[in-house]
Length: 609
Image: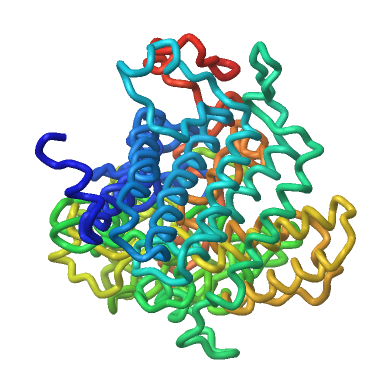
């Protein structure tokens, strides 16, 4: 403090900018540099969050887990920085326009709210520290602040975001919040609070009967209404990205959805986290490109979408139970000239999110298939394994490859073909597309292979976009309708879902009667926000993750080439690695780190730890 003093920072706009840059850099966004085992702002992401939710399979994360890092100790220093700013700036306010001072104070309250949101969704009630604590001016006992109730934390978040909305300006530079970002984040936070009030069953009280985990069920509608109203404040200021969208043109709709994650001028972006080589970078492309486009680091295909996710989308042939149709009426595999034929009518959002077998990426056809079937095709090809099997494929009549170094197989016409595509599926190589798919969302389509390296990617992360705000509002509206709150909530949810579906190129809901289940709203969210590290928290706040992951083996889609027929067929099956997911209900709340409890016995541990 004798080198850089308050007057050196808080008397110029440049000083304020530097202080804020530090705070924004530490915001707990689950972006390209996040994994559940290593936390935020970590360079090496090989345990991807989508492999924890049923969205994807991965070679490195193949069972249920909870976060394995101490977020608590990362959060409170940032809260202190926000509190210090709030406490100190008013002393120097005379150096600036009052509108600027109000905006900066709103930014600090926004940063504090976002940080508390990251805490409460992990731990439930936490100590609310809204002033700078000082030692030794304050005694150790004074500093042992107990956990507040979960409700009190959400209410504090709402108060901070309300202040931010009422004091911040309507626009800001990229990467910094404005008043509508505050409203958008309030819609997210209040939706979470409403879900906890309605669905949570895990309760912990302290000696004063403060409910440290859980919120009284009677508060659910209040929070859903707050989420609904906050989302409405954003309307008219942002819009869904439709720059290259054209009605009825699937290719244009697909390209439009791809572009929305790369267009810095997108009207959908509410708050982003920017990257720029070489100052600040990540490795998303290196970890996730298909195997045939692998860069020099030797990584690829870390995130492999499950068939469970793919089956949520429209436009693929399906059985009456909603699963993909791969067999004809006689129970024989349907044959295709090209692997892409199965997805010819898929909704554009699917193919903008997932690379399906035969898709074109970086001007290459992405080869994803499991092997060559050498048996007879006369009279049709029967299932290779019984339905529901997790057994390996039989060696008879199947030629496969353990890795990308393949020995070409000679087909009946004398031509040569690799046993598995250049991007897998390989039987022993973790760099292949183990689910039969590869992720596309956020992959840079213009990055040359020489730059597909760790710590070389610099595409922008979109932390909050208008589509999420719409989905927040739709879900809150449906919950209010389901609770008998009257009004036009069902009509609003219907209209919003169709806005999102129209941009996606999906089939529109015919009427409000089609919106007959909360699952329709939730599935729309799962499709729209896939691979944006939001679904884990949704499944937790809905309290359905333990039901979805109860000895669960996720589904894959294995393409094969029939040597005799000269065509492809698809086998929909459970993951042959037999990776089983079981979510421990304790994990709806994470454990308070022992290192924190050792500092203060006033911190009560969460149930089950």
